[in-house]
Image (cartoon, rainbow, N blue to C red):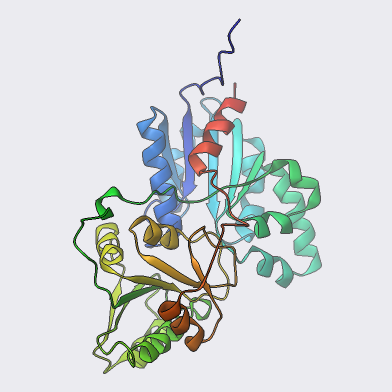
Length: 329
């Protein structure tokens, strides 16, 4: 008898535990993409909006109406501990999605009692998805069977950027920063482009800022004040981000650490070169650089060592969700 192949998942209710109306950024882009993909496949998707207790409670009656898939998207580990009792009793399959490359740093900063509490809390989740191998390796060894590495954004090179398309701006560079936080190192990108303006007098930098428009972003604005070759935009929407990346020659990612950056994958999909610090696993094709402004400038001018994608995966969240729904049967 011929092998019927893998069993397709039954149509399933999926609950996205995430900030449905959260701040612009990679997590929002990631779970919105997954929602669109799941709905396209015929699954019913409902948000439990973790950014609004009132909106979250509106979804509560539906949580107990049958076995469903629950995906809890977080960047801060303490939230996994707080909601573990809820996920332990939900009917269906529960998944904790760890988006942030800061997981190791968060674990290192925890007092021992909180670390023990977290280790116990993680057992409330049937699966834990991590966005790179480094995150997965920091989770308790006893959870290894539940950990799966996924990529938070499924992307392919946009065919509109094939040969014959209008050329992009050869000296436009772009960088993204969440609220001007220090580990994004947007100021390093500014200094790198300042150096590039010696061989390229027309070089310009576009800063895509988002998140909290507070003191740290004000400091970045002060740094670039009077620099006519730097433009900063705040909370640009998806269409504007796509347009900027499609016109940029190079996307800079000078971060101190990362997970599997959604905007890096977006830039690659838009056909831009990506030059990033060799501080975290990077997708295949990213050109790696040292941390100093001169390092980034040299990589832009001369090319950097090209990442082979080690430490990341091609398994998408849709792939992992499909497998999790099969486990519900």
